[in-house]
Image (cartoon, rainbow, N blue to C red; front, side, top):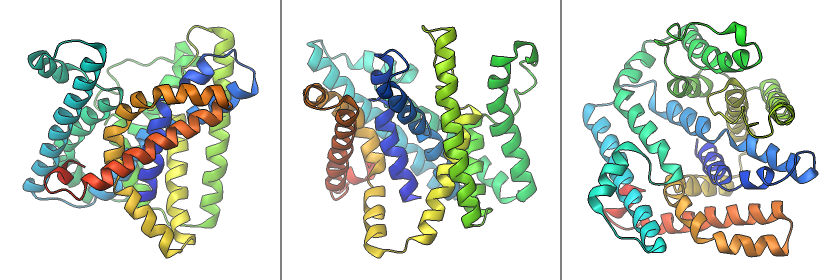
Amino acid sequence: MELVRIIACFFVIVNHTNSGIFMSQTPGGKTWWVSLCYFFMCKTAVPLFLMASGAVLLGRVDENEKHLKRILRIVADLVLFSLLMYLYGTFRSGGEVDLLEFFKRIIQQNVSNAYWYLYLYLGILLMLPLFQRLSVNMGRRAYRYLIFLSVVFLGAMPIVTHYFPGAFVHPLFPETFLPVYAGLLFLGYYLAHEIELKHSYAAVSAVLFFAVLLFEVYATYMEYQKNPEDYLFYDNRTLLTVTVTAASLFYLARWFESVVHTEWFWRAVVSLGGCTFGVYLLSDLFIEIYAMGYLTLMARMHVLLAVVVYELLVFFTCAAITAICRKIPYIKRLF
């Protein structure tokens, strides 16, 4: 799961830095195609995080005290790191600090582009006692049924109605299904605990990943031909296309663990994986701090190479700060 978290965390940074490349260019060039492939590959970030969470949180029933500690930690992170981003933005713009306005704001919206996930995760934690009790009483068939309704059916409906408007179903019909984000928790647990590791399954996962990725890219190109002003229909992490690529990556990461046994490598993965939540919390701040440096890089090298260097710099800076903070009493609880 640490390897999955590292991949997902880096992909979050890519999601917040890469899209400006292809959106500033006319479709058809090599840079546009590669940047768009990179973009859709990294749309798997949130589903990967949710599947990893489901893999480790479901299948058991925790005590209420443990649930409360998780909730309080996320609330503390939401308030403190939102305040950090708010103060940075206010001082940078020369505005005045208004803490009352800040607290009003974080109740209704995220201060940082990345922090919308904290609101989603807080909702998941509130439902987790029920999700855990549901998961321990489900068999393999029940998991498949829930995943089909929540992830497959709901994830496919928007695609079907996009191409066939007449196939639209009554909006109340799926209202009682678990939303896709919740379904991804159960999908992660199912893939981690109910599906055995086989080379043949890994090969199928790799083929699925690249096939669906190429479909997303080509379909987006065709969307541009129809409407150049709004062509990112597939930029939706709840669509079945994103779920398939994320599930394929998730399985491949598990398979990779089963075939690679280099001890020093996995020690490094565990150490770096333990820093990923802190990297996520700090990433938007350092995306802004390093923005001018990114412009300098683009002037000296190809834009795709520049953005990857920029993303790696943000990732490892945040990881280093997190590693230090995780050794400081009390502060380490936030990371």
